[in-house]
Amino acid sequence: MLPRAAAPTLRRLARHYPVVALTGPRQSGKTTLARAAFPRKPYANLEELDAREFAERDPRGFLGQFPAGAIVDEAQRAPGLFSYLQGEVDRERRPGRYILTGSQQFGLFSGITQSLAGRVGILHLLPFTLAELGRGHRPAGLEELLWRGLYPPVIEPGLPPANWYANYVATYVERDVRQLVNVRDLAPFRRFVRMCAARTGQLLNLSSLAADCGVTHNTAKAWLSVLEASYLVHLLPPYHRNFGKRLVKTPKLYFADAGLAAALAEVRTARELAVHPMRGALFETWVVAELLKARLNAGRTPDLYFWRDSNGVEVDVVHQRAGRLRALEIKAGRTVASDWFGPLERLARVTPAAGAVIYGGDAGQPRRENPVFGWREIDAAERRLSG
Image (cartoon, rainbow, N blue to C red; front, side, top):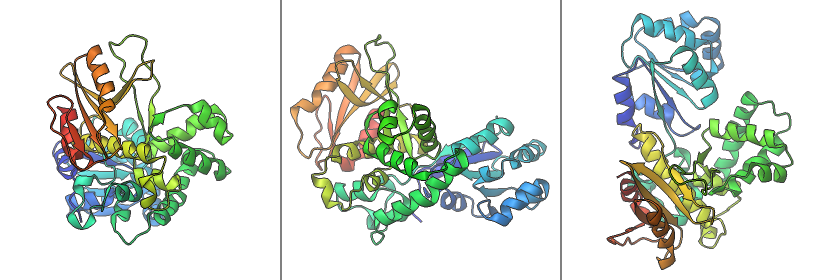
């Protein structure tokens, strides 16, 4: 097992809360992490029909199997269990007693807010970061990284990503959709997911998205909520505090994994990405995902934004710390160009901001203002952004 950066945060939360909820997309490694972090805890998987029926029909008896606590996988599958968990932890409020995992925000969080509020620590786990990969799993180059993605099953070189992602969408995403919303015909939803992938890294225009998919605005909004609840997409909000009314207030849409977006966009090989029109969007998607993962793995709020004025001048990611903005411009090109720094300079004229650039080349440039980081230096770029 590759060590996960979120493991210390998971153990820390278990020292303070009687229940810890570990949530994230399916196949992101939640179960593996929970069992590795707490190897002595008994384990129950509510995806298994007999275990789920036991938990639903006799919740007291189900929990009675585990007097010292347990890891309960896909806990949202038995929503009635949460009330009985509340009774258990109220009787014995020992830290780290139950570890719950779940891959749907709606089901898991509704159970937590209704029954376990104040009793649970929450940790979000996304797929691997680049830094978490060992030497034998590192991609050969940037195109390989963007095409393959960072879900645990696809980091093994022998598995074709396109096959795995097709099965992933069919097996997990569409099943979650059926559980969360009433979709009789999945064909429009599949088209909607592909259209979202084609728009990763762009401003969200729900009306245009709905029209292209042949569905209503409200349907597109509901389906987007499903993708968010399943941790497949993330909406990056605009930063507009103290800048008046001239700033764009529409969020940007990002997939949580560039490989999944590439597969949905039918990128067939890593070699295609050298000249593919989505190269820039997929690179930006990967960088934003890495920044989010770093914050979530540490248990921090994912308080990242983008800045864009009404003239279209945009800085890809900004973060406020101690009243000062930190800004990062993302460029997929392999050669540093002087015009990349224009948006950072524009932002600095509006408000105090420390900028940097990350790009698709290998060599960084330690400039005094707006230093440049190569894509392999994503960790250094994240530290610069976080201050």
